[in-house]
Length: 559
Ligand code: NOJ
View 1 (cartoon, helix red, strand yellow):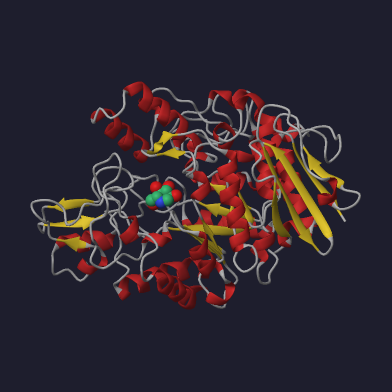
View 2: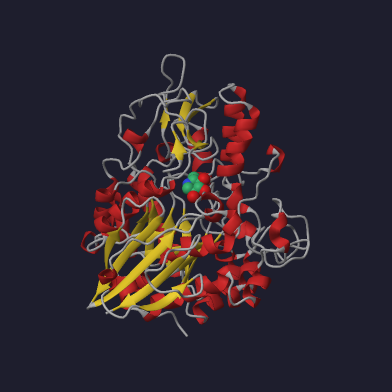
């Protein structure tokens, strides 16, 4: 069966993210690979997802786990070959699924030939592919700090100038002001679409337009560096660049494009996703996953306030609801595991299902991050030596070295927020390698794989896996889940997330208890119109308006 064609197919789709190094290792080297993904296609088909988003599989020195690309048009040997990629594409297409690639073009690796040429001399033909500037006052050209701590500029002896990198020093930023850079990016994107890719997730795509003068920013609360947000995020030519990319590459093709956009606001996101503006299908916004960050950033975590979460997500539902389009996610490879972060590990199964229900019934395209469908938890690694992620290691060093926080507090923050929580291998079975590898895994396997694993979940009809499968199937059965108008309920309730979706006289009532206590559901039964029928729930059915048990979630359809 070929994937269904036609406009806006992605509105009724569910996307599954594969983080290849941690998904499935076919050759025992401890790192997942493309043949490993192919081995698990039947599992993905059983789950019922429509699209696989593959995090980067390109050649890379692996400074930022592949988000530092040294060749856009090939496959990293540890993942396989282009022929393996072709087999994966075919395997997905044969099952009616599509393949979305990761387009990482705000920056390259410092080992990309463009950068090697660019840094060689001030006269290089590629010099202007990147941002090179002389120092100021014996220091960098401006005060920007990088996302992964430390300055955003590195001095290069060869030519006596600094280059800009908003991430690690091994991820130099491409200069999109240069039309040759944009044309080169268009070529890369076209090449993958011509080969059969079905779209792109675009890494930090709202960082590509910078204020040309690159002015210094206000000082950050803790790091001592300036914040670049005002000058390098949602910059002056962003809409123009995205529209151009659409015209040059996507127009006339049936593709899904999602722009990863930290610090995008709902008004901007609407402009990016209105079909008639021809920019993107949807964006990943960050507001809801930043609500538990304190003044010192993500490694200064705070408890989540459900009322604030609802205020944020509900505003996005309203803002993009009619003319734009939302993407819906709790997890990805950059976020700790949602069940540990927003749920309660003591009620792991119920809270994983409640989080899923809350998200999947909203308006937008849901994303499932590998292992989320199993209710995988944070890794709780207590020793910094067990961590691999450059962001985690850099911030840990910065916190401890500056004496800003003591080692115990730093480790607690890391254990709670590190991206490595999402990057431990997928737990396929209870065997020592978790069915992920027969070798030594590149990052530790969560010891709870003996209980939490795909083999057990597929065998158990009440598992988180089968609950996700049913949620995904419901989206295909009920147009109200795709198109219904969203209306929030109980906005001030500190424990209950509730809303309706309405379409053609049918009302979907979604209620979820985001607490570990039993709580009353103070709703007027008229919100569900007449005869509400339960579509799904994670406890035995006691009616649409009964008190909600710990992490109970249910969906009713009335008419
Ligand atoms: C966002 C990616 O998701 C993340 O993993 C990466 O570190 C940064 N962009 C830089 O590419």
